[in-house]
Image (cartoon, rainbow, N blue to C red; front, side, top):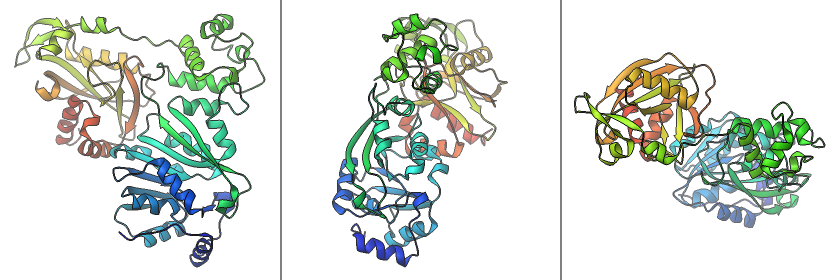
Length: 452
């Protein structure tokens, strides 16, 4: 690989003139020329040859070259066609992919195929919040994000309760990410020089069990409602959602005249669970649940507790359901970290065991309602025999189409997301360990039938 060093100020000016680019202020085109700072940023991201680096707004490739020197696979997303062409011709590296596209139109789901995705960029100030919410929207494939942001935005993202910078954006990001402001960046290190200072900020995903689970849609609604009028007391703003504010305030440990900025992230989660509590099934309840036992021809021979079925690898019955939307994408669920088998792995839209006294069809409808809160017409697709790959489950696979909105059971499901089938197939081939084994078997069998 050719070695590339960051450009100094005179080289940047000359290159921009050569490729006929006059920096556009409205697009946030400010080019970093401090070579020590560039190297420091790559060090903070701890870029290695195992990483898949996505860079938003690479400009002339100041960070791109250092990431390539570390041996990483790099995807740069550049909105300006002239800069995209320059990057492609300047680096000519097999580990670099240059995508001429507005980052706001990029399909983040395609990144799940890659392991160790790190996101870098000097984000245009005018769209920094939109880009953050898009790329860090949970569930996200990104294991680390490091951005240069307008200093005021950085302060909002890393703010603490009761500060003037603490707001809805703070909470929406911090629900799933630990945010750390590393250092302030003076305007003098950019050309042209911006009117404000910048800051380098990192976003690291929280562990799935670090905070209590909550209904995230309700969380977002309450937070946005609570900060809609910062000077107004929270109890008055949330009257439609909470009829007895005094009781709610006491339950989460805040004053009855509190305003939105007084509540910590933990208290906002507690308030969400006060309004819409999540029911977690007790482990002893699931362990004693009874399943029908079958022989190698799927004929009933008895029943046993879940713990005995799984502990002794007894053949039993299960259903898997694939739910598709109108564009043909499939809904996948990420299993709860509290599941006794395959926690935090991706799985079918809904799946579960056939219980004693149930038939497959009834179990499929029940699981769909319990896990996703929806009722759709289901079509039987195929049956898989019991094997080690299916955890000794005979599986009937069903398919349905849903144009509505699911309501996942957060006691069972960590997250849900629609994926294009082509992405799922590529993802399984690259990273099969990200999925529950029975789903992989169902998906392979489904694809062998031509996806129908």
